[in-house]
Length: 88
Image 1 (spheres, rainbow, N blue to C red):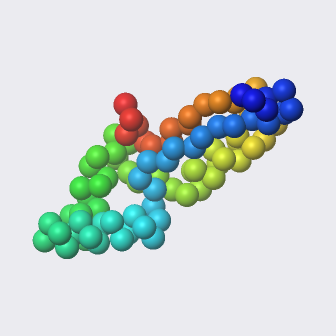
Image 2 (image 1 turned 180 degrees about the vertical axis):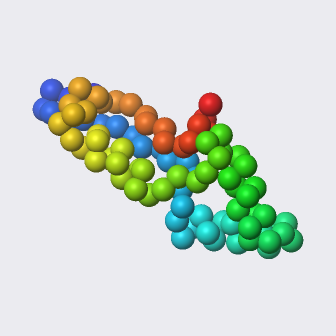
């Protein structure tokens, strides 16, 4: 809030499980550790998501675009969860 009067806004984006190379690495590690197929390991991750799916990088990018736009000019100092309901 030190710079709000200078027009600097600060928000945080907190993504949940997002489809990415690192997600695929975590699925593979879980499959190996649990001695299950990749499909079963992925199903375990998806089962933790209240929305029943993994998020996409595009969805996170849309939030970032919104927060960088004039449409969000009155938003500052907030944490924005984009986690498919994980934090509920």
